[in-house]
Length: 110
Image (cartoon, rainbow, N blue to C red):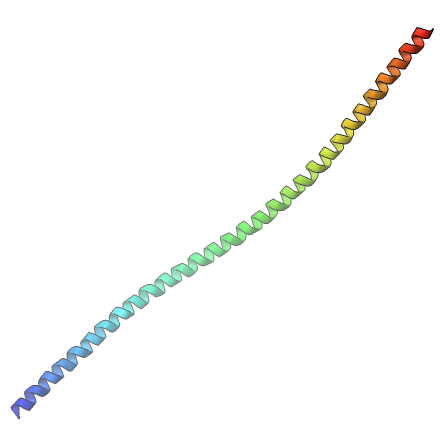
């Protein structure tokens, strides 16, 4: 009977050791879980910050594109008006030269 008692004691000791090993492993997994939860929260905060920044930059880009388009329109209109002024100036110069020549011809006739 003593041998059976010793065997039972050995089994009991092994069972307690296995349970302790399982608890140690559980604690390690719990520790990893907590670390990953902390990392997850940090990543979610980072993502939220980046999402807000992205929205802000998208808004800024949209405003700047609209402003650039307005500049393009004003530049195009100004260049078009300037070309018309140049054409009018050329026409005026041509008319002025022709009139000057006509005046000189009339003067020579008299």
